[in-house]
Amino acid sequence: MFGRNFQKFGDEYYWMAMTGDEKLPGINGVIMKKQDPGQPIVNSIDVSDINAYILKIEKAGGLIVVPKMPIPTVGWLA
Image 1 (spheres, rainbow, N blue to C red):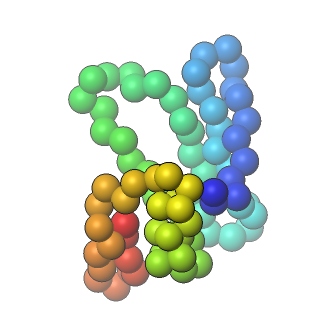
Image 2: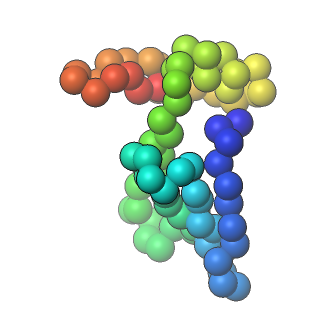
């Protein structure tokens, strides 16, 4: 959906997520099992057009669980 690359790391359920060109701003990250029941899930994905991606996600069967809202001085969140 977002053009990300994932690479398994080690023998555990631990995947490295590469978001793009390392010379550009971005957030690489990890997908792993929770280490603690209270550990929150945090996802941030920068896209060129949030409205277009909302439609792509819904068309692919995904669900927008937080409606589009502004983040002052930053942009939009959904």
